[in-house]
Image 1 (spheres, rainbow, N blue to C red):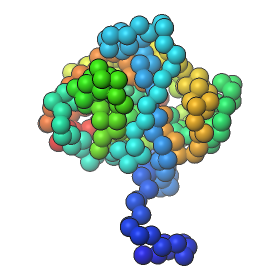
Image 2 (spheres, rainbow, N blue to C red):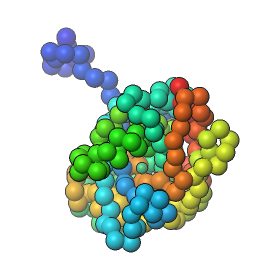
Image 3 (spheres, rainbow, N blue to C red):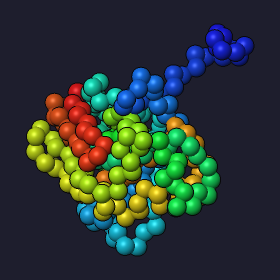
Image 4 (cartoon, rainbow, N blue to C red):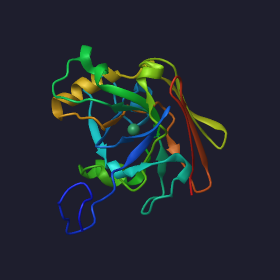
Length: 235
Ligand code: MN
């Protein structure tokens, strides 16, 4: 089969490029990579059994096609009985590079979104115990529900403000963006020393305390001040 824009032929059908809607335009944001910051709120690090003061930042990834548009509903994944929500502010990059200094890092940001780092906590826990990678816990189908990207040109760069998540109308997670151990510019700078960042990259910036399990039928509603809301039903 031939690509319409070139003479390249593929031996199998090329996958669709995952994209997200962008507030204020019909143009879409193409998703290249998804990075996630681990244990970036002290209270969450403590609830997961770690000392927040001793750790340099660490990262894991999800697959770009794990992105889920909220109105689709989150299908409860297989092989787990302990699927957790993690409300997070998502940073969407419009530019990239390597070894970006902290002072220049926000210049890479196209915008922000409200996302959920859905986690098969039981499988993640087993992987941790065995010293194995986290993909089975973190990078499964539909594990990255994400609302529309809101351009920084409209809202600036949120560094403080409430971040919370309700399940079935009951408050479960609360925090403030100013509680991030590694601030957004620091996370970008640190990541850019490990990887070459590029337009289309998303960074899930970490979750406040209060993570917990959901079940089919639950409705998760999350909020990040200055960015917006996300509502996802577990189906
Ligand atoms: Mn997370």
